[in-house]
Length: 65
Image (cartoon, rainbow, N blue to C red; front, side, top):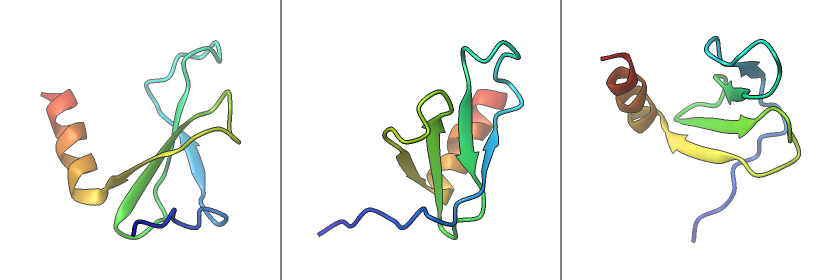
């Protein structure tokens, strides 16, 4: 059974690639060992996508290349 991680202590930061107008803002929390939670900053109480740290690294590297 998968359980939702406790994100009550997550420290969220806005992506450096989000536009400055506040319309396309993605936030990630880097202080969660083994996982990378991602959310839409416009709806911080909304759903959170949670990726394994290795999968997130692969995704970011793919986007960069």
